[in-house]
Length: 92
Image (cartoon, rainbow, N blue to C red; front, side, top):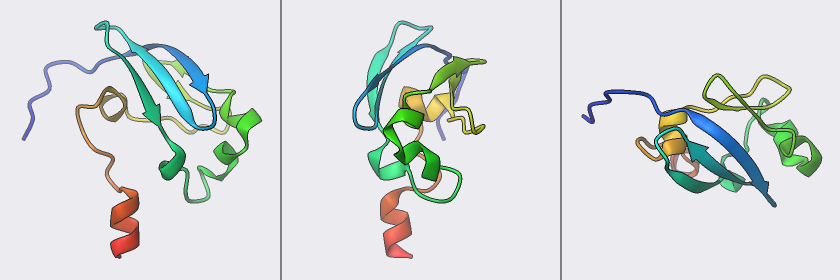
């Protein structure tokens, strides 16, 4: 198991259509995260609207949207995989 000594914080976010976030972290890392295959289920449904997706902000070290959706900064940073991936959903 990977040992985490600190949780990285998102310091800036830029939307790159259609569903990519360009993220900057407090440790200097910058990366693009494509969420196109992760926007499933009722809570993520509003994010499929490009205007709503573009309302992303940085709050308390991660990204969040007006409907309350926020994402794990460790997953965004690339330290861990999402708890459920698209392949997990398709296999089940």
